[in-house]
Length: 155
Length: 155
Length: 79
Length: 79
Image (cartoon, rainbow over all chains, first blue to last red; front, top):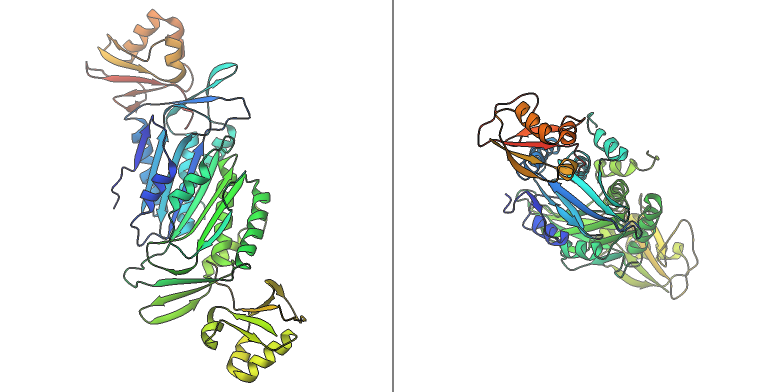
């Protein structure tokens, strides 16, 4: 099946296109690949540097457990998750998620589902370095609402 | 804004990762890029070669009109649509759609919306070359259902 | 005289995709093509077949000039 | 003796992220840290702070060995 790791946490800047190409290659029965790239915004000159802390061995295990549940739930062929940790400058990629499925509805929903969880419930600690100093931040109300959409089964 | 064309119809095989990299580059205020890659399936040895016909000047204009409406509806920063025409072998990319927005909900929904329309209503004529000969095909009932989801406003 | 284009199954059925037709209206195009190939004439009148003149869908009649491009579009399949 | 890890704002507050602590249970870890830094002790008992032993969340008490890794996890922000 996959010849690449499914989940990577990395302190290095990475290039989402290369990941997408690798993920799409050599697929004969996958009709649909949905993907998402999360980028650090400059917030119009507020220029917040983002810093993400993970607990290696704990964070990746939690992501793997959730992603495997998503694979079953949506009948995925495959997924790929790459998440930056450490200091992230505006415009840099924070997260890449790709999902492969026979048809597009499952691929889209699984990608959306994984992102909602990663943004609100994954074990990261996030700090913004802004003009007024540093602050640790928590999930937004929108993040919680997005993630809760999936707690009840949808058709 | 964009230094690349927004819509391309091409008879050449193309590589979705390179398109994604170009699309993501140099963005300071885009937090979210959703993308979709549609691949030709081998259908377990049924080995249907797909052939897509477009009407140049008509098909691309119809896609542009629809995509601009999507840009407004979802508040997109940008989109990129590349669609293969001509003969497409199993495993090759048929379509690439990427959408850029400040936040991920809009990016995902716009990408999903564009794909539903492209798969069911865009002016292409599709022929499958199968073991039992050629046949022209029409949108599936699922394609129509997917596209109709968007005809009523959602929250 | 107008340039006539056929797409999808219409082109396969006719055995051509593009040719000039001596006609000053869509009705005359239909008549000229049906005269020569009655089965094609029937297919052009079939359900879901749309007509575009100079790349814009036309419902009903249109006057054609020598530079007009008339396209017969069978039901679209999506991509 | 156990290896204690702090994350997020807890590490910033304490001024360290990892150190050995002489303790045979989570309760003893909390007591040792609070004894030395009462504000940190209070923060570790604060709302939403979870404890993991050897990378698995533990609710309540756990016996620690010399090889145990105890992590205090403030509310997670998502990525």
